[in-house]
Amino acid sequence: MEFENALTFQQETALQMLLRLGADEFFLTTKLASLNNVVRLKIGRIYEIDGEEMSGKSQICYSIAAKFLATKKSSKIAWISAIPLRTDLLIKHLDMQSENLDRIICNYPENIGKLVGQLEWIRKFREILKIQLIFVENIDALLHDTTYEGWDLGRSHQFEIVDRLNKIAKLGVTVVITNHVSKWRGYPSPALGNFWASQINNRFFIEKNEHVYTISTIRNGESQAVRASFEIGDRGISDLILS
Image (cartoon, rainbow, N blue to C red; front, side, top):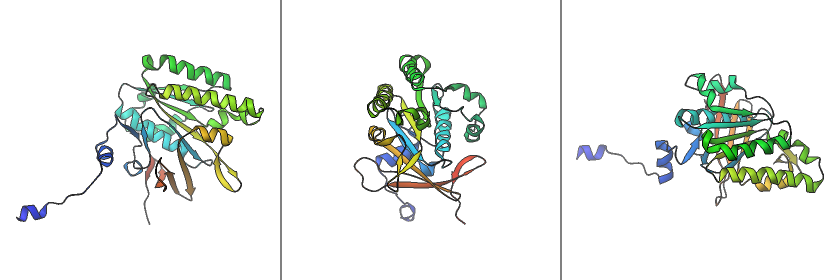
């Protein structure tokens, strides 16, 4: 009887159990467990992380990449950006040797045409290269010209990029995009305009208040945002230490 009284049970959903057990075949997450109720990426989906300059968007990507490299031993990452990947910052998130960076294929397209070509190359050779995760960093810089082109031309270029990303995602590749925010009628809105914003269904928003960073999202079918806070230190993102 004493033994029975000592037993305690905690109710959890099937999703909570999968996250607790680290079900990497179902979700991609960060290395920080406290964020993973918010940042859980389904395989074969497109996500966008929005935030102001220096708000922690890239740090979240580095943490997702580090967890991916640690758990997907034979898979690779495609990293597309307007600027070179900061491997010195990514390494801070790695608990492994830096040679794992060889599993990241980097490309820095100079214009929309080269971005289209890179995405088509990934689509064709994804299986051979074992690419399962793509980061498209600073999409607003890569598609900057689309906001100054005529409305029809700019929209057609944006649609072409989204269409190619969707075709890749349908092959089981997860896509993570980062984008800056701009103010529209006093409210933060993803850069590149309303058409681009309408094309991305899964979106995270990061805010910074002094040393505290908060990431939030509203999932389909839910009316309230889920959010989690973190800090950024010498080892990348970490749990928030309350003083």
